[in-house]
Image 1 (cartoon, helix red, strand yellow):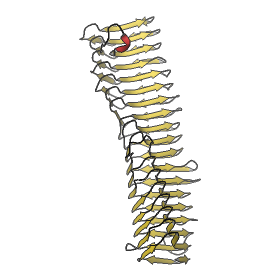
Image 2: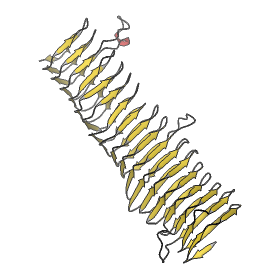
Image 3: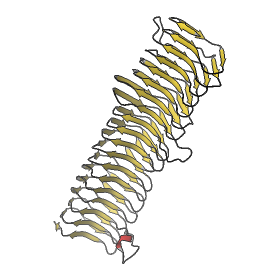
Image 4: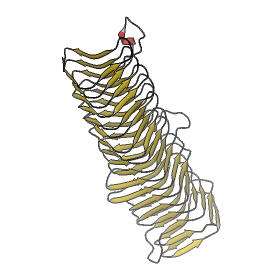
Amino acid sequence: MYMNNNKGTYNGTALMSGNSTIFYGANSSIELGSSSSLIANNGSTVGVYSDGLYSGVADYEAINRGNMEFGDESAGLYGINGARLLNTGTISVGNMSLGLSSEGSDYLRNAGTVKTGSNSIGMSAKNTAFTENTKDILSTGENVTGIYSKNSGTTVVNNIGNINLAGSNTVGVYLEEGGQQTFTNTGTIETTNTDNTSISSTGIYNNGHTVNNAGDIISGMSSVGIYNKNGIVNHSGSITSESDGLGIYSTGGELNLTGGKIENKGTGIFAENNVKITNTGTEINTRDNGTGYILKSGSNLTSNQNAEIGNGGIYVYGENAGDIINSGSLISMTGSGSIGFYLTNSGNVTNNADINGLGTGNIGIYSDTGSIKNTGNIALGDSEIIDEKDSSKNRYAIGIYGEGVEVNNSGNIKVGYRGTAIYTENNKMTNNGEIRSDGDYAIGLWGSKSAVE
């Protein structure tokens, strides 16, 4: 059906074979009512193709309140040249398809349900000023993007609803380079890998824009909650990742963690290329063998938050990182073989938090460059001695280990059997704290080619 500079409502049923555009509106407003049903078993079908703005009274040029079911290479609502689109019904499309697609428009809204197959996009917005999902975008296919936004100007993208992508290599929200985009998530974005594939998925992919996450992001195995490239991420929501997953990955840009939590079985935050990280309110918890922060190539961290680390975990790992300042009240190592801070070729580390790790073979702070300043109390358990003749097989409990760095400690340090409170090599150690041990063969201060005060 073709309409030109007109307005109409359809509440019937259309059964098509495919390879067709069911409604074409030129500078018109077309509404598919709640009792409407458009079905095409074959592919290459468009439910409503809308071109241009309607000159009369209308909020949208294409509205679907009914049901659409199309095959591959199809689109539910497709608008160009400013046509505004709204879905409050259900749109189901096959592979290589678009649920809603808008170009050069003021509004693109989904308040209904969009379902797609593989290699598809739920909502595609190009040079669209405002894009919003308030209900459901769903897919079990692979290579699917929930919301795709590209803009040469200024645009706002919101997810208040639910984006659930169950296939591999999926992206919940993708913000393309160019323009100035602001994305806010207060809903739920979930990407999972149901076939245990190593191909990762991403909750939010940000190319140089501003992302505000106050909602929930759930990522699957080997997947990323938020991928940030030279943009700004403001996080106050929840990010949960499975094994080998990443809560937030950032290359360049800025991370402002103001609330909520990041809970992971892999790495909470991986930052490289001079990322500035400020954590004033986000709880970072790592499970066994996980890492809270990995900082590389000049990235730095300022945090006043507590943390919990599982067996074999590391709170902060720095490689060629910048300065680290930690002012939380407690870093808790709940198991054994864990490290609070491990820094190599990095800047200065200042720790004002207590570090508790009463398991075996835990280390509070290790660094081989810069300086270590500690004012927090450190309480560790015993060393784990496996081979008396081969020390490389043992795991030693060490409060502070400075290799070629200046160590200044004013906190109290307690270690267990065969533990060492402070070890320095090739530099200076200053201690104003109390050193204690209730275990045999413990060492308070050990300086190798070092000055001890």
